[in-house]
Image 1 (cartoon, rainbow, N blue to C red):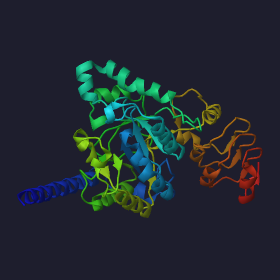
Image 2 (cartoon, rainbow, N blue to C red):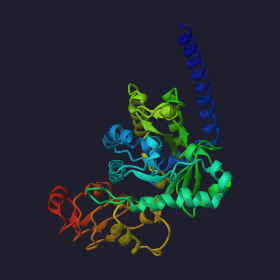
Image 3 (cartoon, rainbow, N blue to C red):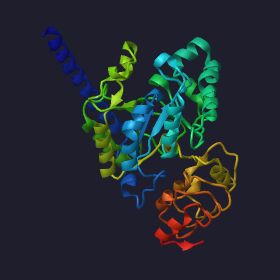
Image 4 (tube, helix red, strand yellow):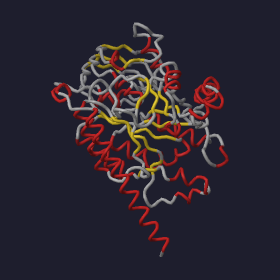
Length: 397
């Protein structure tokens, strides 16, 4: 009985401080990001360019089975793209490296349009590691090593590879300004921590980006999130929400069998119901869903032949990252005979009017539906070209 009373009192105190925190945070965000006439009166809000949005950023890839089981279909249903920040190792189970099954699931999430971002090779606390071993050693062991690991991974069946990460999330949200300056923009367009002075992010951002953790351990009331979404919408900016596991409330963390040392990790979770509630509110406000890379203004491509062909069209084919805003300026594109099999990235050409995709290996044309200005198209000599031609009323190239 005494134990029950003690736990009840603890929960009441916890709820009180959570609500006090969210009330202050919401007020601070509103004061730091006032509504602007420009944002409210824009004739046209363009995705990736100036349309306010929301980004979900999930940490720790030992949770990939949760992401896959409870997130994949939900995100697909709502057409939501998110960022998954990965390591090379499982936090528990003896700190083992990811299995091929886990790698396959990470790559399958990428194939759905989600961003696979960098979270450190072994998830080391950057500030602590740098203080003990030096900045160069941290970059070598945690940053470069994961880049090399990512490059070696491929799906066991499709043989699809991981994209090279464009953004980074600090483990434990631990960083210093010096660390940020050392790795961005040299290695990453954006590096994500937690709260800072403004907590909302503008478009085409470079460097540090803040995030707001919405795991159950910190969030007690979704209404606070809804208020923040409205503020972001009115300010014409983006908000990044940090999460970890996606798990229904009735799933017991202890059932995973990772022992007492894993209990702290188990507190960092969000339920699918909470996720859906936030997604529905963002849609109600007509906000876009972005990856962290997209907030950074970077276009990425799964198919390396596709990226190579796009780079050939740019004034500087060797620039580190391909700018979404530059792709948005293109109205005509000939990608015929480039051995392309995946169209991921074509969605960034929002002003495209004429497109030639003939003589490639493309079997999925669904992303073309996002190109609302497209009026001339050639998809001949592709595996599923006839099926697409018969369902679209678009003139031939």
